[in-house]
Every structure is written in structure tokens, then in C-alpha cells.
Amino acid sequence: MPRGQKSKLRAREKRRQAQSEAQGVQNAQATAAAEEQPPSSPLPPFGGAKSQDEERPSTSQAQPSTDRYRRTPLDDKAILLVQFLLRKYNMREPITKEDMMKYVIKKHKEHFHEILRKASELMVLAFGIDLKEVDPTRHCYALVSKFQRTCDDRLRGEEIMPKTGLLMTILCVIFMKGNRATEEDIWEVLNVMGIYAERKHFMYGDPKKLITQDLVQERYLQYQQVANSDPPCYEFLWGPRAHAETSKMKVLEFLAKIHDTVPSAFPSWYEEALRDEEERGGARFAALLGTGALANVRPRANFGSFSHL
Amino acid sequence: MASSVLKIVFSPSHPQGGTGRAGVMTDVHRRFLQLLMTHGVLEEWDVRHLQKHCYRVHDRTATMEALEDFINNINSVLESLYIEIKKGATEDDGRPVYALVNLATTSISKMASDFAENELDLFRKALELIIDSETGFASSTNILNLVDQLKGKKMRKKEAEQVLQKFVQNKWLIEKEGEFTLHSRAILEMEQYIRETYPDAVKICNICHSLLIQGQSCETCGIRMHLPCTAKYFQSSPEPRCPHCNDYWPHEIPEVFDPEKEREAGTSRASKRSLRSRQH
Image 1 (cartoon, rainbow over the protein chains, first blue to last red):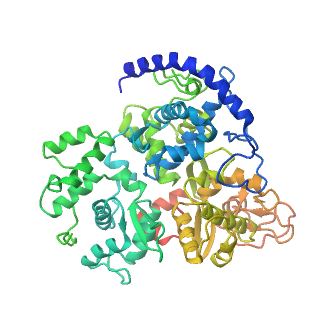
Image 2: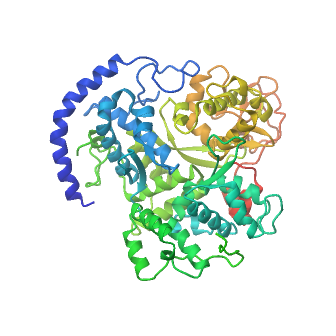
Image 3: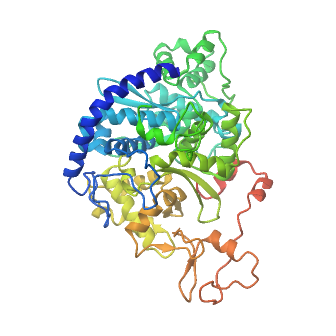
């Protein structure tokens, strides 16, 4: 966003803020003072924890010098919200207003928007991460990097091979099954490729360990129990590193290449992949697609086909 | 600028921060932070590459700062958010590692939004067993036997096994042969919290004075040292002696971690990772 626009918005906001903040600070301070102790987190106080006041970020080390400006309780909440958001950044699941209220905002509910605004600014300035509202009806937010991914965001530009082909397949299946796939779904596909859970594979070794542990440790996949499943069954999702190093569009291109076609041949997935690109600020990328220039994804030769899907 | 907290720390339009003591935050630093967060915890070598990569992407012409200065710069900016890039070392072989940590002392509750109440309690129980243990490891059996005492929804042992695996995957715990200890990331993030919550049970290294989970101890006077601290302390001693009581040090002295040796070994990173026990 051009700086000029943002400064104008800020100036307008500043005027409005100055009025409401004077009020808000008084209210917030009154609330903080009336706060019950211990803090109303879902956890009972754990082993003699000494923090008795409303949850404020604090350390036993010296505070950073802020003598020219005193932080308001809302600033403190904004900082706590930033910490909360950072933890959610890697989860790549939408963050709900409900969660933010429950874990961070708590008794400052009426100042939600202001706290959110402050936290968003901090996120952008410190980390280059945008907080976007992705679902206004359900108040869901997502954290999106302002930066374009580069192919070298993988450390040292090294390929993730020999697991890349297998990983891309799994990411593909997960995407096609609506961003989460049961373990059963995954094995169905891998079995077609001659990869079995109980059988040692000449290239992948112990495939079950590879996909449920190794790739998860490396944060390419998330492996979790399906909620309320009894007997427990498990599902896979993309891990934070998969999100960082590749994209839905890349994965769709991979699939398209295998089928000797183009991503737009799969209209609903293509739409979703385009939306994902937009979210990532990939307007430039979409233009590239239009000219037929594709990113450098090559399906490995030892791949089974996807024709049964 | 609208947000007053930022007045103290940031000034995107001017290279010098308002207070004159804050650092300069550019896209190089922001991308670095994003990637560090994505990985959770990184070894030093990877961190150096990461830094180089970020410069390459955003600011080819600039001279790259020394890593220490680069990180101190970032930390001076993040200070007002109570977040910092902390450097530690793996307890078993002294590899330097870095993680972005939250300095607020309400530490376990940081995990609260990621895990259910009974899962958090399972972590607490495991943590307590680890801290109380002599070796710094708690056996799977002992942890699972506490499943009935957990707060929140009832959890079966089979489920608890999966939850423990989740902790391993999220780099809070490390598993070795059916026993669990704290991941270096957990130690980085929770040291202060652990020291404040378990002041009597907690063990401290006699050399570096940091939290000690795994280490060696003197059989005479009981002081403890991290394995990498022992390695450094006794590096050129033909006859290692306890720094406290001067009695003969009865344990095998490990090697000092040498990043150069690692690189020369020439084994590819990927295969090395799968051969070594799961640290990172």
C-alpha cells in the first residue's frame, strides 16, 4: 500500500482515536482495576504462579525504556494479541474472533477493534505479516505474509528430494480432498504407486514413519487425530513449511502436468488456487500464468498416475 | 503515526528510530523473522544461510551485518513486544540453535491456544517428571500412568501416546527410545517459567548457570554440568576434576561441537537428519 494513503488514514484515525482513546483508557483502567484475580484463562493457576494481575506481558528483566510515552492497557493487550497471532501464524488455520476474545482480549471486549488494529499494525511493521479478515460473517482472520515467496525460501536452495515427489503427491491429495485428507485417503493413493505402510520401500524406506513422523517433524505435513473419532483415525493437512515453500497453484500445476493438461482443466481447484494466490499477493504470478509461463515444478518419473481420482 | 507503541520502536520512513536506540527494521529482517518462525527452531548454520538469503532477496547491494549484530538489531526492535530471538544449544551435543521466543513469564498458557486442557495437563505432568528425574528423561510408561489424573476431558492411554507425539512434532519434547525430554526450543522458551515454577526441583549447570535438564553430575558433591559445558570446560584437561570439590570427574568427556568438522564430513543434510536422533 502506498505510504501516502496509509498516512492519510492514520491522520484521520488519529483524530478519532484521540477522542475515543481518552474515554477508552479511563474505561480500560477502571476495568483493569476491577479485574478478578487470578487471570481468567482456561487454566487454573499453575504451581504457585505469581502473576496476580490481569495478564500483562512482563519479564523479571528491566523493562525497555518507555519514559517518553506510557503504554496503555490496550497497548499491552495489543502486544499479547501479537504474541497470540505469532503462535497461530504457523498453524495456517483461520483465527476466529472468538478465540482472540477468549484467550487474549477477555474483559476488554468492547475495545476489540482497537486492540486488533494496533496488533495488526505491529504485525506489519515488525514481521511484514498482514492480518486479513477472510470471512466477515464468521469473523475469521488469516495471517498472510506481505512478501512473495521465492523458490529459495527453502534453506540453501536444496531440493527436498528424494522425498519431493512423494511429498507433492501427498500435498496434492490433501488439497483435492478439501485441504484435509484421512490417512486412509493417502494410503489409497500411495498403494497405487506401490508404496505400502507395512512394507519397506527401496527409496522411501519406512513409508509410514516417513509420512507420519519425518515429514511432520520437518513441518511439511500435519498429522492429527480426526476430532471425536472413535476408534481414533487420523488425517493429514499441509504443514507450515509446505505453505511457505509451495502453493496450491504449484501443486495444481504438478497435477496438471501429470495429466498432460493445464490447471484450469480442474475448475473448482483452479478457482481455489487462484484465491490462494491472491491472498499471497500473487497478482504478478497470475499474470505469468496467463502467458503460459509456469513455475519450475517437474513431476518425477517414478510416479503413478492419478487417473483413478 | 497512529499506534503509539510503535513510536518508540519503529520509524519506517527514517533509518534512525525515534529514540535513537532502537534498531532499524527492514524487509530483510522481516523475511528473516517469518522464515525463522516457520521453522520453529534453527541451527546456526541454517540461520547464517537464512540471513544471506534474505539479503539476496531484498537488498543485494547492502553489506551483510555480522549475524550477532543482525540479531541484536532485530531484538532491540522486538524488545517492546516482549519477543526475542534467543540463542541456545542442544543439550546433548552443544549445537547452537536459535528460536523466536516469547519473554512473557505466563509461559505455559502460550501453548493454551494450541492444545486442549487435558493435553496441556499431560505436558505439565511430563514436564514435572522430566524435571524431577535424575537423567532428564521421563519414561513413556510413567507419563502414561498419570493419564487418570489429568484435568479436563478423560484421556485414554492410546490417545495420550498420540498427544505426546504431537508434542514431539511441535518441538516441545524429544523422544529417545521410549523416553521423553525437553526439546531445546522448549528450554529456550520456558526456562524462566520453569525456574520460577519449580525453584526447588530445578537443576542448574555449574558452568553456564542456565537451566539443566540433561547433563553430568559429580558423584561427590552433586553439582551438575551440561554435556557441551563439560566438553568446553575439560577440553584440554588430561585429568578432569570437579570445579567445586576437586574430586576426580568420573564421566566420559564429550567432544566440543565443531561446525567446521560437520561441514567437512560432507554427508548430505537430509540423510544426516534421518540418521541422528530427532533433535530438530
